[in-house]
Each structure stands twice: as structure tokens, then as C-alpha cells.
Image 1 (cartoon, rainbow, N blue to C red):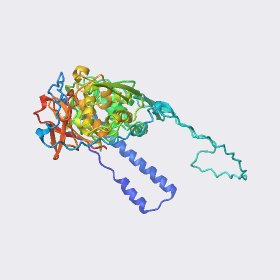
Image 2: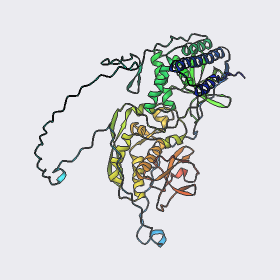
Image 3: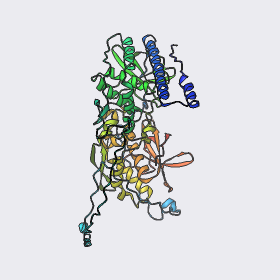
Amino acid sequence: MASFNIRIRTGCLVALALLIAMPLSADEFEDFAKSEMGSFAQYRDERDAEFVNFLKAQWAEFDASRGVVRDSIPKPSAIPVAKPPAPVTEGEEDGGQAPPEPATPVGEIVLPALPPSLPPEPVALPGEDGEEGVTPAPAEPPVVVVPVPEPDVLVVPEEPSPFDEPSGVEPEMIPVGLSVSFFGANHLFRGEFSFPEASLTPPLKPAIAAYWEAMSQSAQFEAFLSQARDMSGDLGLNDWGYHNFLFTCGLAVHGNDRDLANLFTWFMSVKSGYDARVGYSDDRVYLLLPSRNTLYSVSYLTLQGTRYYAVTFDGSREKLGKLYTYKGKYPKADRLMDYRLLKVPTLKPEITEKELRFEYGGEPQSVKVSYNQSLVDYYRYYPQTNIKIYFDALTSDELNYSMVRELKEKLEGKSEKEAVDYLLGFSQKAFAYKTDDDQLGREKYMLPEETIWYPYSDCEDRSFLFAYLVRRILKLDVVGLNYPGHVATAVRFNDNVPGDYVVMNNRKYIVCDPTYINASAGMAMPKYKRRNPDVVKIRNWQ
């Protein structure tokens, strides 16, 4: 098996120890620093040169595997409607047994802070809504402030420092060399970037090696990479978002050439410490990224027990057969992709409001919510991964605020079960049902912002939304229920709520199905009533 090994240089550590033990003058320290920087640059150049030689030789053909299917059982094409429970008359409760204990009411629901991207709430003026006007207090007379003359102060200019800009001279602005549009916002890189021109003409193996060699010898990639990391951090991007940003930069650098953009992303990803690979088949280049999470419906190669997924960022689905790639690894590039959504990206606000209408208890209901369209666009081609990631995901401040604002008065004072039943009715009836295959032609899990935007949703999407609402607004514990061909939830009440339930960690969770029309807490869909689901523990982000 081919491998790629680099000797680790220890001279810097030895020199640092000597530096600590032996005081140096400023000139001596500067000479030492230049020497060590030169040594590091030489080490880096040697490392890249050896990797280029490796890329010129060590390639092999592999059979790609088709993407894993998360659930082969088809989802229901039509959703059943539950019959309302028969009313229980006084004296017939539990066969004449003692009446149930008083229900726990929902306490005060605290409205979160208003996000700066949303307009301020209207404030009622005195006399509006039937309230009595309030007579304003008379204004106090203005206070006249007589300025007190201050003695003149003689300002002695300081001696200019050789490290400061000359007095009165603005620092020179670094020209902008690269502007990248990422989900509606332009990101400007400081400095003039002129990456090496590249072309991919067969044979591709030496062309790919030549690309790495040219990029590694560029004096600009490190400055670019430093800024790209900072921008990614400012945007709150996870690993997929960071690589999406790199790919977008690659398109800007290489004139929208997808294959060259894949090479650009590969190079920058490896230099960022990821175990990224590239492969080629015929005249196409594919980006291969390993993941700590399983990806579904994404083709992959297995190298030394690790799956390398052919990831894309524009929704294209790579169906690979045979693929050429290399087995070796760049030194210290061993980081795996993490697809968890632990932050909400701070993308350009494109705030949209939508009114959701439904019927509950025989009365029409309306909920007006706000969401960021940029987030919907960002999530559109997010790879399908573990279902727990979607249950765990955070939602935007705009959606949080508008949901709590709209549901606060509707839920406060109700019992826990009454409040949960209301949220079930909202999740069941405010959205039209259609499977992902029927709506999109592919399987896709939707986060709450997407469920609000898309015209249709199915069982997973409603379960993610309902679990978010119960946890965020009612502060109750929720678990996911993963059945073959169906997803639902279960809620842990403080009260003794009857009905279907599951047990996890000796705790009882009442089944709540956001897709089963008119079903209240404790009612499982008949088709899945006797089946044992996989119980998904949801991360506590309260």
C-alpha cells in the first residue's frame, strides 16, 4: 500500500529552548526569527514537493459505492385522520375511580429579545384600544448652561515612533483583489490575489499534481486561507458551510469551472487540516470528504475503512462508477467533516413574513412568523445525514421571536397537555402534506425555517418543527421516534397523561404525532401503534 510520510523537523523546538535560556539583543532576535521562518518555509516546501511527487505516481482505481438509503420503507402517501375522543362525563372517569389530579398549567412564556433584523413592535399610544388617555406632565423649564472658559493648554507633539504611521497621514488601504458573493452578501478579501492560472487537460493525474504544485508555490494562498477562516468564523459556518464557502471562492477564482473549483476546495481544505481527497473519472474531478456522520444518498469510496463522500454544494448528485484517487495522506491533514448544526449561520438578513392558517377546536387560527430566506437557500442542498442532527439543530432568532410572540397568549394558562395538543394541531394542519419524492424528486429533511417556506412537508419535517416548539416554548423534554417509514415524537409531561408511550432511561414519554391529523397527545398512528421505534435523544440546548 502506498503511503506518504514526512520527517518532522524538530529544530524549531530546540532553537526555542536555546532562545529561552540565552538572552538576545533586538537585532539578534530579528535574525533568529528570520532564520526560523526560513527553516519553516523550507520544511513546508519540502513537504509539498514530496506530496507532488506522490501525486504524480500513486493513484489507483476504485469502485464507488452508491449512496446509503436511510429508510427503504415508503412513507404514507395519505395521512389518516383521527377520530375525536368520546367525551367523558362526570362520574364515569376511570370507571368511577377518583378524578385525576389537577393539571400543571403552562407558566409565563418569556418573549426573547427582539432581533435587530425585525422591525420594532408597535406601541399603543394613550387613548388607543379604549384605554383612557394619560395627561402628560408639564415639561420642565429648560436649564441654561453657561460655559466656563478653560485655560489654554499647550500641546507638545510627541516624538514620532518609527513603528507608527506619520502624523496626519491615513494608513494606505490594501486594495481589494477578490470579492465573493455568498448567499446574498459580498465578502471582500484584503490584498491582491492572482492565483496561478490552471487548466485540466487529459491526462488528469499529472494535471492535478501540477495544480497542487502551482498553488503550494503561490505566495498568496496562506493570506487567503487566513481570511477565509476568519470569514467562516464570523458567519458561524460549520464544516459543510466552510467548504461551501471555499467552493464558492474557487468558482470566483476559476471562472465558474466546477472541476477547478473542486481542486481549489481540495487544496484549501487539506491546508486547513482536513483529510480531503480528489478523484477523477473520464474528464471530471470529484471532491471527496470523509465524515464523522453518515451521509445518505451520496456516493462514496471506502479507503482504509473510511468513507470518502463525493460532496457537492449545488444539489447535483454524483453517480460514480469507477474512480481514480490516491491512498496517501498529506501530513497532519486528518480532520473529518462534522455536519452537526450547533450554530445558526449569520447570513445576510432577507426577512420574510408568512401567515400560517389552520383550524383548531372548530375555530380558525392564524400564526404570523418571520424567517430568513438566506437560511432557506443555505439549507437547500444540505446533505441528508443522521436524523438526530435535525432534532438537535438550532433555529434563527427571527423564527424564535415571531413564534413565541404569536403563540405566547394562545398557550399561557393552558395545561401542559392542552398546550401540547394546540401545537400538535398547528403542526398537523398548518402545512399541506406531500412526500419529498412527490415534491422535490429526492429525499430531504427540512429544518423549521424550510418547513415554513416550502409549500409541502412530510413526517420528519413536522416532527423537527413540533419538537422545537415544545422544547423552546413549553420547556418540556422531547424525544424523536424513528419508525420504519415514519417519524414522530414523544413528550415527557409533568402530569400523568394517558395514552401510547415509550420509555427511555426509566422516564415515560407520551407519543405525540405531528402528522396524524386531529391526534392529541397519547395517540399513535394506527399503522405504527404496535411497532417499537428507535428512540432519538435530543440535545439539551436550553
